[in-house]
Length: 270
Image (cartoon, rainbow, N blue to C red; front, side, top):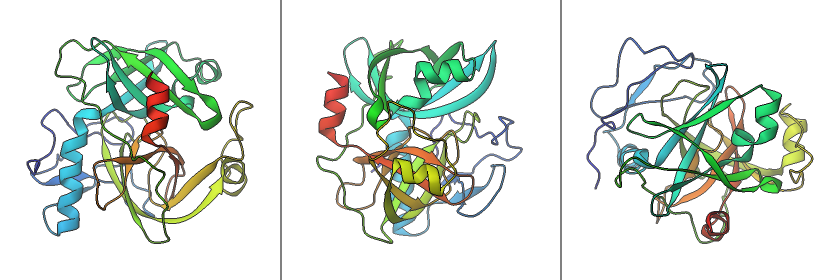
């Protein structure tokens, strides 16, 4: 079982990228709480219940696999995203994220001239697009790690998880361009299509190459912009296996997840 402590390389910033005046104590993690419009720097003690301990242990297990994306324009960080390592390819490490985090369309729309992938030790790497699946808003990029102990791939479930109302889910992501990893917890509410999501949640319409009829799982959870591409986990028999990635979220109470299976990850990394 992972040691109950925060990952040693992390410091916590608010959603504006400013260092929090207080940092988490042992056993605490930064959280985005459902229904709260806070700027970050809120912490929760995860050493109490067995459920809390499971979240903390999962954080410690998967934090080395979690990657933060910095989107820059003329040297200024103007946005962020999240990803997760999925394959150690001998000299390169492949990272799964949302296509809209790293796509050419995003670069052009926001005048982005540089995207960096920041690993858990704080090192920023140039990225290379390996393969994209825009119809499901997924992409895999690769980095060339400076040492053999950087790449820590996670696994995804073999078959798509069928959530029931009230089922719990957990994700770890970067709020806006904070450069910090926060915890978000929530429960499943329903499924809907990508096109319905754009109508009901006032989200952007799907790009022309995105399948508007594809399924998304909807959760009551605060996982705000910047979480896009972060792995989602479900407590249960194999809680360390991810069940999908964050597709989009509003500012307070809704997270939409793209279901992802191990076979899809293999196809994107081959």
